[in-house]
Length: 356
Ligand code: PMP
Image (tube, rainbow, N blue to C red; front, side, top):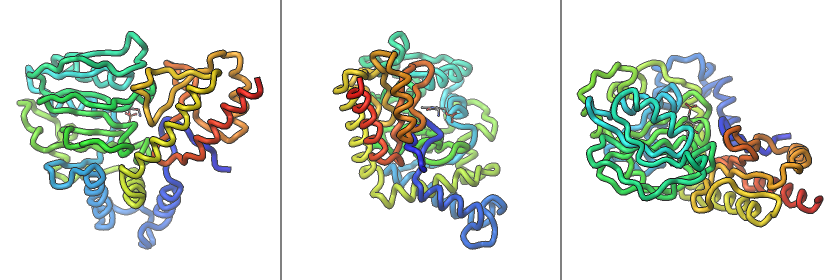
C-alpha cells in the first residue's frame, strides 16, 4: 500500500513522475538505451536540459526578463558558498536574515568571505517567527533570506522592499505559491522537495548582477561560467535534471504555480484548523508566519505520544516526526501530497481526541 508521505525531504513526488522516470531509466525516448547510459552531450539529453531551463523560468514568470536558470550539483548548501563568491565584492559586505538552521548555515559560509551583517534573528525564540522591522544596509552587495524554514515551520509571507539585490533560498517552497519573482535577483532551491530527487539545485539568476565582485572565481564556483556553458560546464546529474523536468511538466499541465497554490492553501488550512481546534495539540510557531509547506505541532500532553504514534502508523502515515531541534511533529505538505493524505492525518487527530 502506498503510504501517506509527509516526509520533509527528500519527499513525495507525483506518482506519474516516478513512473515516467522509472521508464526512462529502462528505455529513454524509445532509444533502446537508458537515460543513465547516454552522453549528456547526446541531443536527446541536451533537449532535456534546454527544456528544463526554459520551463523553470516559464513557471516563475521570468522568461525574457534577463534571468538564467541553471541546474548545478552540490545541494543548496553549495549555493551558501557560491553566492558570496559571486556576489560579495572584495571588501564589500552582505546582509542576511537569520530565520533558521539553513539561514544560519548560509551566514556561516558568507562570513568566510567578508563582512556579513545579520539584520535580524529569531534564534532566541527558537526561530518560531519571522523577524520584522529590520533595516538592510544600503551599501550591502546583496540581502539573503530563506523563504520557507523547513525545520521550524515558518514562511515569509512578504519580502522587504530594498534597492539591494535580493537573494532567496526557496529550497522548501519553490513552485508552491505565486510571488512576483522578478523582485528577486537570485533564487535557489535544492530539488528534493517540490522539484525532483536530491542531487541537483535550481539556480535562477538575473545575469546583470554577476561579474561585479573584483574577485577571481574558480570556474566550478562561477555562475557566469555555468551560464556560458549552458549548465553543462561539467557532467550534469542527468537523472535528477530529467526527473525535475518531469515534475515541472506535471505542474505546468496542472495549471502552473497559481493552480497548485490553491491546493496548498487548502491543505494548510485543513491541518492548521485542526491543530487550533483540537485541545490535544498546539502549533509551534506564531500563526501569521505559519508555513504552508511544513506544519509543526506538539502534543500538549506528551503522555499521549505512544497512542498517537501507533494510530498514525496504522493509518499508513509516514514521515511526520518533528526535527530534533523542535520536537513533536512536522507534516510536510509539498506540491505532490494529495489533500486526501492531510485528511487522513486530521481524522487520526480527531480520533485520538475521542479516544481520551
Ligand atoms: N535550505 C533549506 C531551506 C533546506 O530545507 C535545506 C535542506 N534540504 C537546505 C537549504 C540544504 O539543502 P541541501 O541538503 O540540498 O544542501
